[in-house]
Each structure stands twice: as C-alpha cells, then as structure tokens.
Length: 262
Image 1 (cartoon, rainbow, N blue to C red):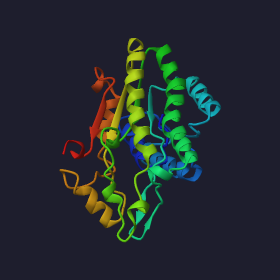
Image 2 (cartoon, one colour):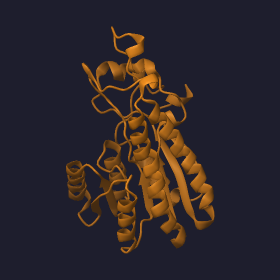
Image 3 (spheres, helix red, strand yellow):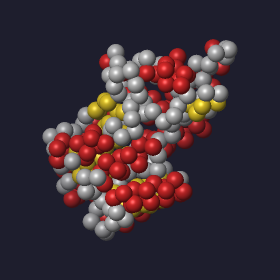
C-alpha cells in the first residue's frame, strides 16, 4: 500500500512494485488524480493488480478502516509512507510562495507535519501492528536528501528581491524528512523481533519540467550534473521492499546523484 499514490513518485513506486508482481493499493485524497493514476497503472499492469482507495493519512478513523478492510483480504505486506506536502518551483516567472523561517505560518507548520510525519506514524501504527501480529512485513518511509543535508537556499533566489523577502524551502519539509528517518530507526528496532523491516529512502530532486534557471542551479550542486529521472528509483523500491534486502533494517538509503557527499 502506498500513501500519496497519486503524486509523481507515488505513481512510480506503485509501478515499481506492480512490474515485479505485487498487488498494489494506491491511496490519496486527490480523487481525480488518484483515479487517473489507477486507470493508467491498471491499463499497463492489469486491473487485478491495481486498486485505489481514498484515504486521508491524517484521519485515524479512515486509516484504520482501510487497514481493517485490507486485513480481511489477506493483509498488507508492504507499506510505503509517501504522502507529503512539498511546495514547488512552478515556472520561470511564477514561484509558489515559500515562507521564510521568521514568518512561517503556524497553521502551515502544523498541517505539513500532520500530513508528512503524523500521517506516517498513524499508517505505520495501523498497518505495522498488523504486520507484527503476522510476523512479516516491510515499511518504507520516503524521506529526502534533505533529511541529511540542509537545503541550499541559493537555488531559490530571485533577482531584484530583497534578502528579507527571498523565497526559501520551508523549514517544515526538512524537519519532517529528518523525523521520518528517526521514525524509521525507532520502528526498525521496535519490531525487529516480529520480522518487520523498516527502512527509509531519501531521493534527490526529480526533474519535472522545473524552470531552467532552477534546474541549472540545482544540477550545479550534484556531481552527476543532472536531476533524477522519475523512474530511477524503481530499482531501489523493488530492492527495499523485497527479500533481496532481507537483512537490511533501520537504514536511510540516500540516492541523490552524489549531492549529499559533495
């Protein structure tokens, strides 16, 4: 089961598991996007392999209901906590406002943490506890290279804008991704004796038609000199969710083209 399954990487994670034979449940709150992703994946991998459920990861009642429904159908063997709020650079002349730390709204802090971190906690609790009873399962938390490095705010700068008004990557994103790594370590040891493995995957930036200037600045920070293609994490997903990684738990696998080591 994949949360945030209608997003760019969520759909790729679903495809990665479907192509190696898994039955995949994609969940999201974006109804039309979820339906579109499920239809596209069903056309490629078969409608008997792809299922969609509307699920708000911040709603305990909704999460528990889906967990109970799927348990009655044999249970979830793999949970990918992917749901997140991630403000994006949108176009050459339009940048989604990203509040500076001094003015970052409390309601946004609470909302983003509720989706990205509390949502992972609730899903891990509801699905992971059932895995522990069955004594098998995998939880994979999707973090970010920003779980191990700070955002380089220079890549978001705009000409002619005073320093005090320059857009930045919001603080909540980094805190959430670092928190997911902490949750990973905690659960990996907590359920180790129940044969439930818990790891994190920290992707680098994925190219998705971002403005050229932003791409130029970011790729300058990456030894490979480019952003990731959207399908380049499929192999990692398959490895981390299968018995190929049967002795791996509690780890944060960073795949960022070398950015975090430069």
